Image (cartoon, rainbow, N blue to C red; front, side, top):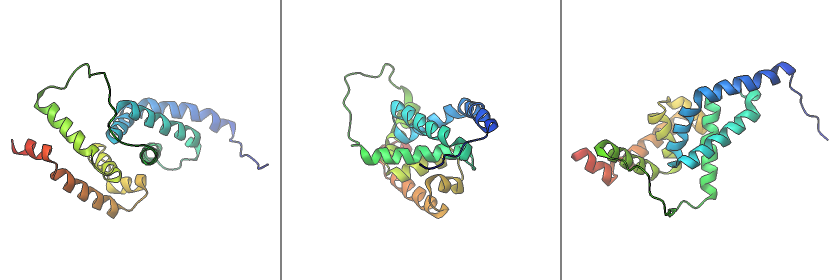
Length: 173
């Protein structure tokens, strides 16, 4: 049997308090990021919970930003889920309780639909760059690529979004 490293008592006692403060402070923002990645609130909640569980296990070993670690874990987990699942439509018998109304709501829904059609890496770059307002270097760290790859993925994503017909109609009205 291998030996297992035991953490000093002070580290073990500090971890729950630090983690709880982090979760309380950043959960709403991280959930928004997860929703932007998945386009589905239930999947977003699952994604965030999975990332936070991983963060809990690795909390004392994370030597960079805990938030960056959780974001990277979300992106990696989402990518692995996508590889394993079929991404077709899921029929449902239930209609939304409150439909969106107004031009802003329609534009927002069109934009979300267009972003959802982007390839996974391009979608992650768009969400992290324009929704989370992270710099290219942070996005590169999260995605495990170079900043130039982030820039090229953003350029390609914006090109695809520019050709999306629903967004073109909105721009010209």
